[in-house]
Length: 256
Image 1: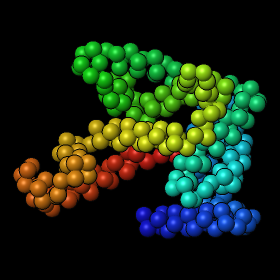
Image 2: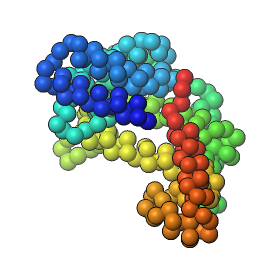
Image 3: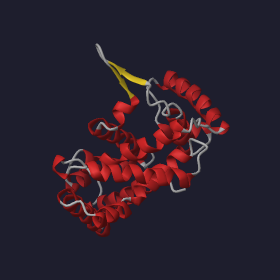
Image 4: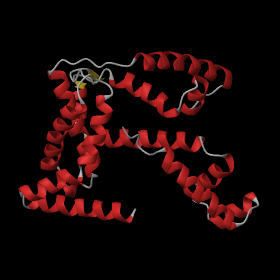
């Protein structure tokens, strides 16, 4: 964690320095420090199309460089949130120009169809919308694979950058318009992270989830939590550590 904070701090320093004095050396360092972001996005996009991962990665670096060139540290936006739409947008433009169609694996197509049926059945039976882990359990697959099938379907329409995503009174907003909207991207990212956290919490044991929600979400002191549930403060601390470790594992990005 300390090392990550150090790298993040160094990245911010370089961004500020580059904004004042655009040296090739500083830009190259920033590219190297954020290469993992490009690789992560390239892996995701490569799973939805026929293009090689290596080609998408190289195209992604062009988007990263554009993001570095246009980023203004004084705006208070996290660089990663700012860079993602540039990197991903560059890849999508590349795919559109090559007229490469998104190919969704047949297994994921079948999973999505069956999952939607299960979702409707559980909603009618339970009276509320089931979470991802409940649907995945019924399907007999991991939560990660269920999410991948959903992501594949959602991303299958992203190659049309001219597609209308919002209709205003006298203006159409296309997907291309939203790609560089950092506020939109930031809100979307927060919502995705919230859903991911809720899904991960639902997979914890009840007593572990209870202390996690009480201490971190409801901001109740550990001693009060211990008194309320009838355990020692040390037990609360152990459950917290166990829950945090499990959440880190559940929410870790999938590796290729």
